Length: 362
Image (cartoon, rainbow, N blue to C red; front, side):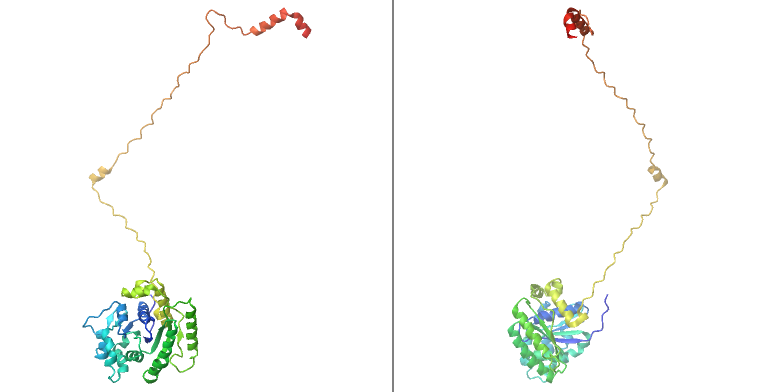
């Protein structure tokens, strides 16, 4: 088993003011990838739609505290924490969070409420990820003050680029200057990406050029980059949420699972790489020899079997074929047997009767 390395805590706000770009899916599956690797992960649902909570099949009861109670009433985070699995916990949200924007307007120090609430549980987690709402309000500012990195999921469209400029140059820059000087932009993850289109290629080129132009400056995105791992469109990512599971549990061999595992390793390094399963050595089990059964003298006598003598081979008498009858042709009764020298006698008689012809011929 791979030994777990010492992990430096990272706090990341997953943010984009444009909705439908993959914030919730990215937060859920990056957290699940880290938890699979053995890291202790806290996911925080800061969206009033509570999609991150629903992603893991959590519907809160009326008396169950949520992130709203933590921010509005000062409830301890431990009272609201829920376990997803051994290494993954979630601070859930519900629809009441929609009223927090109005309720917190008059509260002094409202921008740092979440940061202060997380302090008692901070040491128990290696990674914290926040799913931010698609708006630049009090909740988003709380997330940027409590975290020290920003991850921006982005779809390669023109309108997404316009929203990115406002997010970086106004919200992130303002929070960095006034409240959280350690805030930096880690990178941009392209979701629902189709690399075969010309528009997608142009957007990636513009993003890369924009980030390269900030190198060496004092802006929050000076070290940011466009991650090489693109999250492809994959129906398994949508289906997994309907079953209350991460894509790794629902469809571990799908493109969605492969892409998010690669993205997690690219962002978090070896801390996100799942440990290789240990190979089990098959042991050959030799069954013990059966123990001899004790038998009495009477039983032994019964078991003795006298082998009968082999019978002598039977004598087979040869079969004698019956004689074949032969037919003998006899001369008719009263007649003399044929003379074998008859043709010689005929020749002598002819010579005696015709002497002149014979002498002339000779």
